[in-house]
Length: 635
Ligand code: 6R9
Image (cartoon, rainbow, N blue to C red; front, side):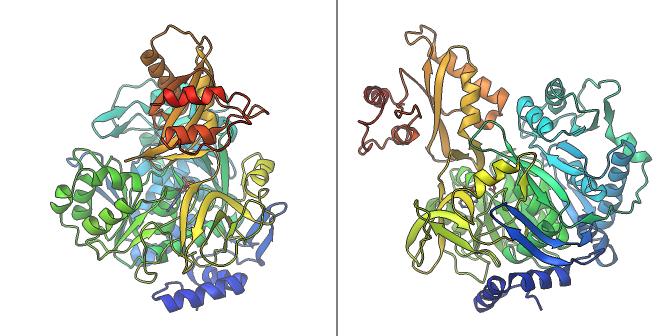
């Protein structure tokens, strides 16, 4: 038995030890007992972190949608697979059974085929949180097309960069989307993006907001009439274990986003196994993850992990504060949600409203609470625990990344005793290491260093689309024979991990990873701007917010600084998206630089954090005199 479902701490340690001692046997048993294979593997694992190359279950053949849908039909055909909760509480929720999902995915997949999409083609999905989003993802997987979901809050520029990076020839979108009281003209954004995407031949448009939009002759087609005509039967494409399943972009230290490539079999096995254990999902539970499917959390823990376990997963179209700040609690009461998975930024925003709204609703169905996306601060942890979980629902603080595909460090609820702000223990099969700056591993407990992973796990990203060298440089070059996460962490006296935050140029704002470089690139496009540097500073709700230091071309610039600030933020919204807007913009005469010309962000970070007591030695700077001036004028 592979101990698919871990129930107590003793068992965790026992299974963990086995997964480390005999990883291949361990994962083979999990794969063998819980999934549907067209053909079993010849080899469980092949790996070499120096190339780097990792292959799980080579030789195996499968289709992930047969595991997420078909195999449940006999026993769970009439069970709800997806509950769609619309933006407005006045619109009725939609319950999609496994049988209906099967038919709808087949219809969609048939449409894709009729439109000429074949195995291996890349399809860009720019769709809001409506059922068509999950269905289009699964339809791609069913025919072996590689989906590249782009969060439907990204700008036209960000969308076109992602479409072109992986040469998508089709875009699936919607006429528009609802977000609280606002409607967003998605199709207009797609039209603008496609002006610079000559490779896109077809755009399929779902109807959501019934707005007037322009349909480009020969390129744009309404989706529904095509679906209505399509057959609801289709044999799934047979995929190899290591065939790419999807590409998902994440920010990096250069302007070009990294298209992380995830493959089929290992991703399926790991997301399914983590879902079952991290949420202690039991048949007939209602599970809700509030993430958007445009992020990895939505891919792994709204779609693939839950559906591979035959679960009922809630998809929420709206926002936490519409029509009021009680919306999440109202949904939990309405659907009797058992597992609730959200982000610290949402918890902080809701906690700020006080506990009145939470008390108004019946949250007694809750069994497990989850947190993901950034470190959860102590105050938010306690509020979540006291007011939402009523001290009886364990909080799973799950640390992981787009690159890791699945949850890596986490408590297992009712198994691992939790500790506020700690992600606690490595999940089964995960071998973390903390490294010092010289590349030595820090052994033992009560140490702090850079978080690496020593051994492959099934759902790790295999490459960066079109740029394997960048994959190697970013993740496998900092420390020999290790995957480097970009995060810092400490290990306490009992071996629990606490993630301390990014050690690179990525800033996490409201749970969104933002690379500093692309934002600086956008600012620098402004004709009045000479140079800029972005740092993060602590923010009550967002966790971190962005502080921009900007030097203007004409230092004595007479232009109105408030207008300039607006223009800069507009540029950022256009190039990246509104999430990357700067909270503060300080105009400076110069930026502190090293003699080799590198901006010393460390100093700027301290100024932004208002912690200037110890700036370190600034005498080696090229221009130490600018530091005092920046400090004097800090916002
Ligand atoms: C799943 C996801 C990854 C980065 C990661 C880390 C931060 C995520 C966290 C956390 C502390 C947690 N992060 N979960 N930090 N505690 N529980 O968020 O993927 O968007 O790629 O972000 O998010 O810094 O490296 P992604």
